[in-house]
Image (cartoon, rainbow, N blue to C red; front, side, top):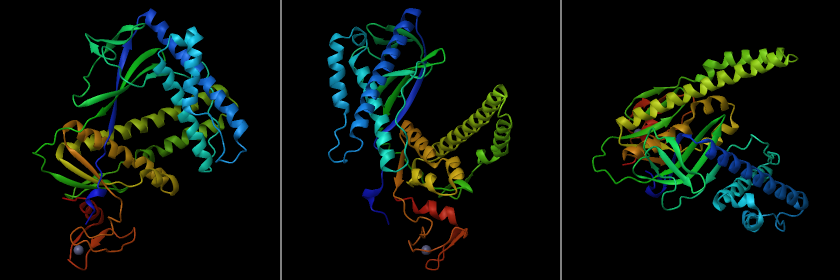
Length: 383
Ligand SMILES: [Zn+2]
């Protein structure tokens, strides 16, 4: 039915853990200072890239000499020898800043190739730059938590932290990011969840089909409904938009309307996330091995008139949530290469062409007759 080699189990699954930090006034000063130095390095690096781009943008792509990440790292090593401010920040933190510049620039370049001009990346004003990252974990005390205190660097020392949940056992810390949000400080651990030991008690195996009428259809016949929160909130959103347009001249009321709009939008986002967590939790609790069709979620959301419905359903997010929840429990999730699962008979593998309107799968070879989505979900199970 499927080529086994094409069935993928995600190799790397990442997860973030966020903790509130309570730095002392002295530590706060160092953190602020680090962020400010990073911001300046970011802007300088970006300006260099911009200048360079202006020079080379008319040249042929093959001979274009753009500044690379490595060039910029070499540059900062040189500057660091004499610059006292740069010396006060770890070299790896500065490298990460340059990496951010590289990413912003690559996004810009790829937008040129795809003909959706993105605009040159912006310089960061004071207050726009809010975090810095330690891109690799050093040995020793760095990043370790004991007695609700985390050790960051010799200069910063131990910072008080609210360590309200432990990191999972089978994980490897990849990066550590310090974030300032309003006047609060947070520490974010990005961890890679390692593959758990194979469990021999995995029995219940299920296939999933993602859809719009039913958000998820399981191969055991269960349907999970799609509450379409955005559609429910649509009228409310529209109201706030018209209110905004009406108050074109009144700045204060306009700001009020914008706030209202953002509030509704945020509520929808919370509802969605909450629902997705519940759905994926239920599936992982009930099943041991999960197969789903690895659709090209991104492309789907991009170019159909069903855009709004598809992004509201958020199949990609659901798949990601399934992956990490399974890994935490030692269960397995596989993505099956996309193919016309809705066209195939799940029992005898015959192709039964049907249009979108046909809701029942009827096989003329083996006589199987069942719900269209349920049949599709069954074809993804490969065992
Ligand atoms: Zn059949």
